[in-house]
Amino acid sequence: MTERPALRVAPLPTYSNWSERESTIVEQHKDELDLKALVWIHSSLVDDDTLDSLIPFIPELTPDKASLLAYTDLARNVHLPASTLVSLIRSRACSDLLRAAGERLPERTRARSVQMLLKLLEYVPRDLDPTRLGALDVLWTLWELCMGACDADEQDPEFYQTILNGVAALLNEGEPFRLRRAALNLLWESTYQWTYLYCPPAVSNIIGFARASYQHRLSDMFLRASAVAILLAPGLDWLDDTTAPHHRQELRALLRDLTRFLQRANEDGTRCEPRCMGRIAYGLALLAQKDVAVGDAELPAALLESVELGLLDMASEEETAMRQLERAWARQDANGIPKAGGTSEPHG
Image 1 (cartoon, helix red, strand yellow):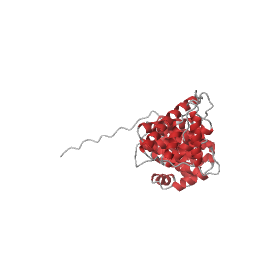
Image 2 (cartoon, helix red, strand yellow):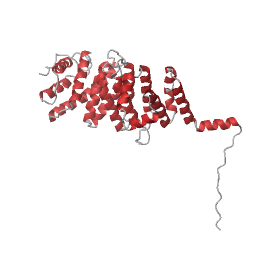
Image 3 (tube, helix red, strand yellow):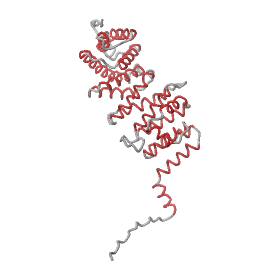
Image 4 (tube, helix red, strand yellow):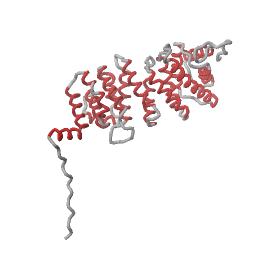
């Protein structure tokens, strides 16, 4: 008869006292206990200060637990179980629900949900795992809340500044391309309404992404990112001697790329995407109104040439603004200093 091998049973841990045992168990299950405690606080208390204090705890949790906390907060606001809301978000089946929340939630409640989601975006895994919420799910949730907030009766500039800076941070080269593209799409869809915002970090990130897209010949993304950056640029503080030179240098480099792009498109007879070009023209007109000199006359001249070649449709007031900008930039260099020896002849 074959002798069966002896079963080896791992020895039970030994503790010197009950306090040591309890401390070890708590440490082993710390993450789950933290989440349960935070969710209990969230579900039991309605004080805004206390609920806001939960946001800094997100980095202390594992990504899955942090996601559950953030979406428990949002689920409570839309009167759904967290598991139901997460399922709807993963299937992209609750756009109307999230937009309604963005429009109707109290200002502070809406801001807290967005801050939780932005904090979560910093830590959620970037891989595409269909079994759990990922960065694209969180970004889509932000997008829908943001679109709803644009229709709210009361507008909070600080709320949009928070979103713009947080989403623009996703344009950094270290992020997956699909996430950077999704972040740009959110900015593209919303920035047209936020040209008054002061968001230096966002503008710098967007310009960096636009220039990288130009170098990699990603034409559509280059034009979209350029349009977003130019629309936000008038909101920068151009009178601050400390920051304005840096802003001017960044934007001047982008406009040089844009000028080359348009000149090449005109030579090739390529028609650029109309919405992009309309927003670029509008942003340049806003810069002209602020008397911000960051380029030379070649850029508005290239836009006007596109109109003459039938490659671009431009409203009469936009065309007038481009001619005024061409004359203004022909009279001074990119630093706003008048040129010596007169001016070059404006287009047309």
